[in-house]
Length: 346
Image (cartoon, rainbow, N blue to C red):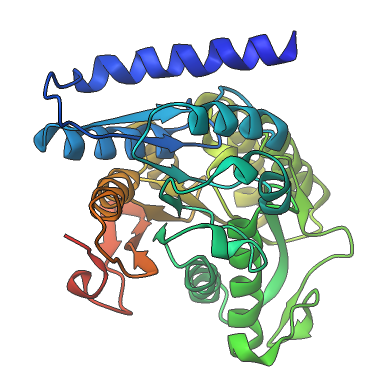
């Protein structure tokens, strides 16, 4: 029963993406796929659109494959296994559980070009993929740390919201946040919970894991605000604002109470390019900053990497994409570390 459910999800997703890209009649057309953690989340939808449109311009196709709802590595493994059985010219994978996928579906990989995007395979499994496309998640975490330092230069009590323990991308973001707030380099190897370094501390129960469930994450955030255990919250993805109406209904009254008390918690959230409703949360003071990743550009770069690999060309191991800060009033700060020309494959 479970397998048939996944099969229906995979087929339905393929049909949906087919509507996006109008498959080419060219006999020499190539077909690629993005295997996402979930297909109903804004980042992966935009990544699918970026890949599909870049492919269509070249007479090729790119499908977005995966299940809807809260991601699970077993579901993704079945979707990936079916994708590997299709006559594809390459796959881009956003990995949920690196070791599980390597021990199961990826044993079928053979010679099909595989790259990762958004969330890489772990160090022990990285030899299975040809390249990674997306943000440098360690540097992304460091930038999240810089944002909370901007709002609280003297430090604070921090709780980090994270997806699951097996997701390499989220773990790298967690490491980056702690390294930035400790003022230690990535080479230092220190990654324990913050205990007063530079004024920053994490309660014993933090970080909080949510299994990539947006409802759970919002409940965690609201509980943290109500108990007043922390004054700073970083969400390493967009789970809390997935349903903006629910966020506003639950967080809005709390912030009204905080204003009367003369206190102002800091909430920083990593997200795909925010929707108008998410931007409104920012402008109304219910979120202090977003750190945004352009899913469309990630998808576009995935297509070009897969295209070149399918033609026998070499590609860089890492094709890193920009992030940018959004502050109230529409202010945006560009990524300072490198220029786009250093990262783009195209």
